[in-house]
Length: 280
Ligand SMILES: [Zn+2]
Image (cartoon, rainbow, N blue to C red; front, top):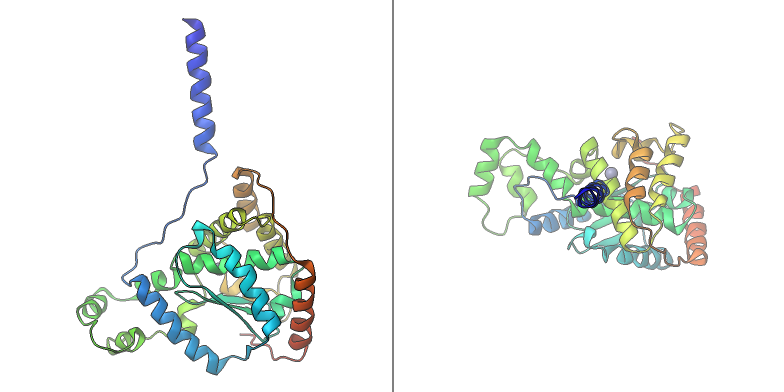
């Protein structure tokens, strides 16, 4: 009898340990938009950004970004959106994503990181904002209920989502759709990003390393300040990321391509040195 009791309590301990070590899946929050509208709004934002930012059209850079990005997109935590990866020739250390899939990395960020793994961490963070639909979730929260109801009732015809919103007095430019996520969204993007890295054979510690370095660089001009103001720290960022990584099973990391990274970094550094800085 005593033995059974011991076995039972051992089993209970095992169950508790398993539950405690489980990493939670993060689901998108409340949203009045459809995933198709995320894609459409992203497309409209891309058109706007192509006129306002110096998009870097360089095959080496684009091919490499897409290679790393598409590997990450295979994770189930990256969702179903059609991701696209491009660079902006801007010396400020920053990256951003639009609803529905377009992801941009500044040449200044490419110049400042130290490996493909860190790049993968940045992309995985941005892709998590897309997969978790943070842009339209945030937009949902900012729409007055009456306007949302009218918007719902009138979504017909060929008008774009953004111009339909404007008819109801709701103004979203490309800029307002992506900047300054909430700290809750940031925390979700960090943690979901770690899962994407882990799923696709990148060392998830790259996420903690990237933020460690940003925090160390602090408020240097054209340094980390812009990334951190667009992606504010939810608090104890590195510790929280480290804690999640410790809960993950240990899986072997896949090879990266240091030579391709070095080549892309050389191109980006050269261009960034002559680029303007979009410091806000
Ligand atoms: Zn973020």
